[in-house]
Image 1 (cartoon, rainbow, N blue to C red):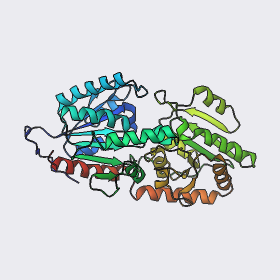
Image 2: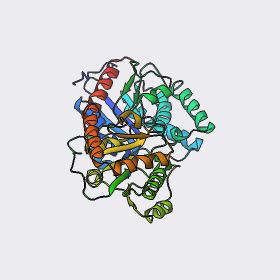
Image 3: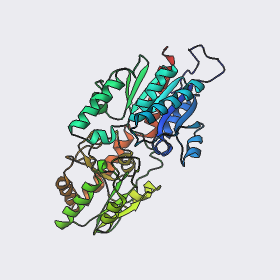
Length: 391
């Protein structure tokens, strides 16, 4: 898709339209959203990424984007700190004058939406990548927080040229939006490159090798994976679990490192920490496990495992249930149910042919609409439509 990127707002004709991304962490953009920056560059847009800069500036700049540092601590809910962050961002937006501000994840939407109003940035993309730990909460506090967020996002932060980008239709419904509304765009997660993540032969041996690749958060259900493996082993299943990922200290649902080390000492459980070679993980394992408690958009780890031709076991929560077809690409268990997960692992440990068949189906599922190119073309269409819209 090639967009007409001629200016329609009276700005100097010699300047290409500017797309600004706002995201809390540079590593998050590097791991999930590089295809969107490349899509914008394919259209001839200038791109700037506003984020907290740590170790990934060079990776972001390799897309042709400029990077602007904006320091903010995700864990902090101090109102004065949030207001100061809005003020700093407003100054950046007034200086840069982006034609589109693309805000990634809930905190960026709340801060960026307020700053966009103050800076006069009319074209806004609210990219909700799940509700995180708030989405995993099922208590009264979680319900109240969801109502407040919906009132803000659909109230003072929204305008006529706001577009909503979701990774699953459930999140759209959570904001009282229909998935087929013109201002709503649903993409297949962050997308993955199927040439980078290729199927490999199943590992040998009698042990069913299962891996969780995720940030080590309670909301990801890592504890459920550990307990499910213990239950499956108690029933005689030859199952081993590998955990790949590190705690996220800025996330209130981070699992303490001491707990991870205690799990690592259990029979058949190994915590490897963070890895940058995801493809090699799936070469060495039969099954991808993500027992999420909710709050997901569409987990990239499921897409990567599917691209590598691995069976998937996950839970019946938004995003996860969108991608995995129960009994076809793997299995979908009730959330927060270690016993149900154990039943699935026992079954897969005794039926390697079905494990293989699920992996083949998962790869086909990915190719049907969840690749990096699928996502790029969808966002290019959204950007082109927004640039044609007069504020």
